[in-house]
Amino acid sequence: MPNVDPELETSVLAYLYDHPGTTKKEISKCTDYSFPTITKGIEALLDKGLIRKRGVKDTSAGRKPSIYEFEGSNYFFVGVDLSIPKFTIALFDLSKRLVASEGGFLDMEEIQGGNHSVIAESLISQVKELIDRSGISGSRIKGLGMGVPGIVRDGAFKPMTRFQTDEMVPLRGPLRKALGFPVTVGNDVDQELLSVLDYKGLHDETDMVAVYLAVRAGERSRARVNIGGSIYHNGHILQGRNGTAGEFGHTSVSVDPGEELPRCKCGNENCLDNYVNTKISQASNHREFPSEIKEALNQKIKDLLFTFNPSLLVVDMEAFPEIRREVFENAKSFSRELANELCIEEIEIDSVGDSSMACARGSIINQLNQKLREPSEYAKTFVSE
Image 1: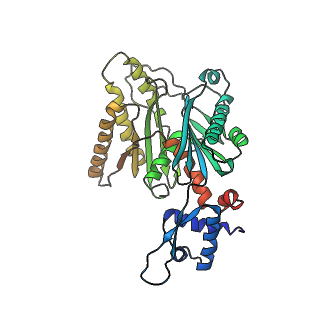
Image 2: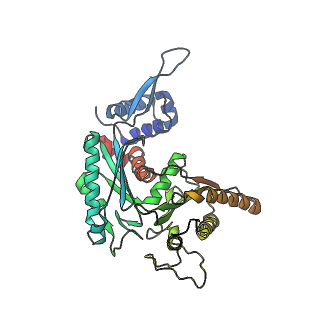
Image 3: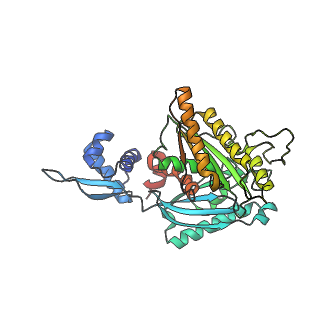
């Protein structure tokens, strides 16, 4: 079948993506395309395997019209969570359903010795292995998204604390060359926030502000905690001029005048990340949870609520399950106090739940939406099918 105008196909596809179980007449009415034109678009999408027929609509008289819906099981995206040293690779279909996944660890001796190319090499090998094991043809893989710690710029990244490097470490170029499909790279916590917003049906909201505070335990060492954050504003992740917006773990906390903290690689000795990890180290031989950590986290949440006045604050205390509920409840209580005292709407406080696949899933969302909804991206991806 000859290809149809990508604008028509994306209009029909986007409508069926958002409104499963719809007839041609209903699509025509809501998209301003004529019924015959919609029919051409439907036929093209059926031919590509992007939609399917789901029976007929029950009507009282006349011929029963066919019902169509989005079909997400014929094409796939790879999502990568590069935690360092751990990484997780996951295969999702177009419906964002998890199809397969595997994890592994990077060789930190090589990386700390200056061989940063081993990162891309390890990921390329594991991605190929996962695809081969899944039995899916490479032509059906439409892209790879990756979440990485630290600063991200032009497909390369520089971690704040995972290992020392004076240069940005390239990822997009090597992976795209070796794998043969589009690759995007973003901050890991940003990708997690996108996943949370997508689950809540808020990913396309343009008039809201969402803030995410993530406190995670380091892999292979429960003594190391990584603190990150993300800001969503006007329909996009706010990255700032140089990509460091949302690094809440490296914002300052109040410390006693006589207390000296070790130097943090971010350059801010009094940062939250450095403070929390110092307190963990000092309390390693004590059974009680350090009260200073809980106080610092509670204060940071209050600061975030005042600074951004978000519609939604997402709090992930994966590193500290012993105080997770208390911190969460304190945040909700403070939100109610603000609403009463300032006569404003109460800020929604939510948790992440299971965050094991949040980064990998979130890393494919923007790329997936572009390829299904933007005619130029759709044409490059599916028109040649």
